[in-house]
Length: 405
Image 1: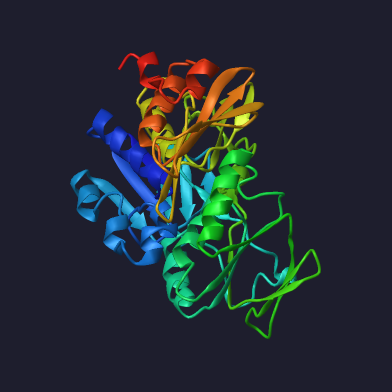
Image 2: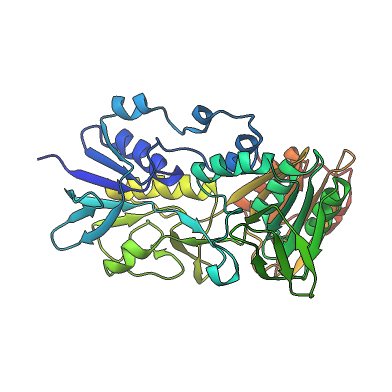
């Protein structure tokens, strides 16, 4: 009997895992279980081109359906896994089906944090944005809204603000932290995007929290922590995500801010691997959870190699991006724990880069409309090279001269 691997989850990590697994083992039986009724798709465009209506649904797909058929992948879409029997090596689905496995891969992703019903989170007109169905519901609702409140000044909230600002709408971004992007970027990057959004007519309220939403069945007002009230037609909640761990936790797998995996993507059960947003990985003596396309792909491929006995450690060196208006932010590395920053002016108006250091070592770069600088920064981080401050502050110095290409 051929070995059977069951993959639960249908996002970027799952597709990367399946593609690598099939390349390494052409004969293995592979089943993909996803709780959405569509083939796996990209999530980043949901808050950008897809929300704008500039990218069709087919353009979101990571692979067309016939690719899965051609690779011999059994698809069970629109089905949820509700229980794992680790002793019997079976998975119970929400339709009562029981699926056996030799190896199980959990690529469960993350879910948006929602406002409690007690503060108005269940009112009509309150949205989150994580799945295609969320964007499909949000897009027509935005078309009829003139007063939009976005709760949360992170990347998703700011991307949506960039999409919906203008056209006579009043757009307000509410951030309880002292500044937008507080958790993920240094002040120079926050300052840049604050000014960008203000130039485009977005109202930013920083250091002010949401107390409650109110309305007669449908949201009509937002009550803020400074005592003020805002009339609103639509609210988008973008206050972060939480890893989907319930299935793993019920099965007794180790969970620590995500499904805990080692540097080979192995869980606490030798027959189960996990990859993507639902996991926490070893890093710098602790554990971190990363939400990025790069991490999902790298972990998915690492998990596939582990399943085939070709283990190689995964060392996170992530990269991210965000598009807002005509600005492209590209991030190399992970700025967590930085203790110093340096701003390098760009070569064109409106461009710059922010360089992050921890104990005098380069750990991350925010490149704003600076794609060449981003590539150089990424190469420097991967090679553990820290440029001299004199080189970074000299706009005429060619940073790529520090790298062997």
